[in-house]
Image (cartoon, rainbow, N blue to C red; front, side, top):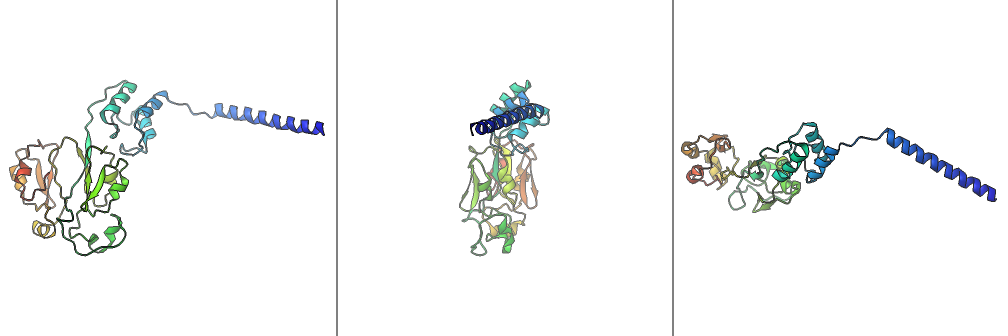
Length: 262
């Protein structure tokens, strides 16, 4: 009986040693070489994996930076501080990082916009497009206020207040998740230093907009006529500012009769 126990123990021990040697050899043969520079870049990134850089996550961005397919300042969340760390790792200049923040092109709050009916149902911005009129608000171009952008934001930087989405610019990291989540394309990423932006996206004629919303652009063109740098134009019956030309002089905001340029 003792001989049998010893034989079984020897057999199990021998199998264990064989498996260990096999796994060790397989680990050496099939090991993936780790790029130390890529590891260092990944460690410098914030690790939010938000996709705001256009890549699947921080690991993908780190690989793209090391391979030269992405700039060292490609991470919108990390900003200038992270860009400088990565530039030091890569041995290059970080370049100028333009800080951005999300902006909602709508001011059609509950007190300013009209409603066609009372809605009771699924509170989802994408689903609301399938109900009559695209939702209870009379302006079909405005924010529905059901918070798809809020759910998408990983930084708690956007909230629904009085029926429309509002961005906390200090908390915003310009990852772009809210931009993707808005089915009406009302959110854009704008330069942090931009002082004047148009808070309306209505494509209705002025006469119609006036009836539907107290905070809508009527496309009157007064801002266009008074802009000294030619940075404003009217497209689809609402004003649009060309950030490349805009000097933030504020004349357009002062002259706007509807006060939709913030």
